[in-house]
Length: 197
Image 1 (cartoon, rainbow, N blue to C red):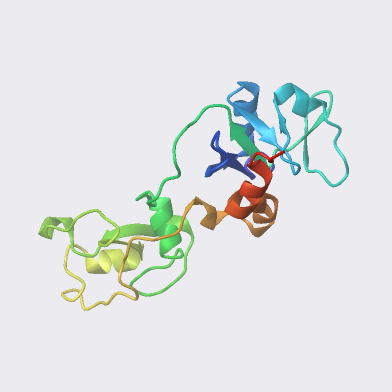
Image 2 (image 1 turned 30 degrees about the vertical axis):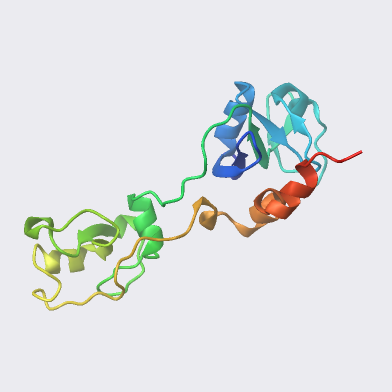
């Protein structure tokens, strides 16, 4: 669980661009691709971060000869890209959009018991896109086959649409508390604008 916990990744200009695992964050730190940003907006490379003492309230990872604090936010050393504005069309995101529920019978099932179904079958010109692919349990998918929904005597619970959420929608709430200053442009401006003399 510790190595798969989420870490917020900021672009060089402190704009959030994605989340990554603790494992990948440590790799990026060790390769000097990124620095850790703490609660006070100070940055640390891998070695200076490893030398910080681990206090009782910090989550940590055990190494061979010591504990190291888990990073919550990392800052890229070079400009990468702007955040993706559209949600990637992937199996995982279709399952998330449909809340792991069959869109024909409504049963919520484990991922292994679901598959994807083309509302308008590909054999009849249906496309593989957000508006035509839904989660389906295996019995419903088998029942529908390569027929249209109406020809199979079935109906959709919800019309499939392109989701409008971002990479932050899957983040546990406790992470959002740590990340809040980086997600709020007012806080970003307050802490990062040059102070006039």
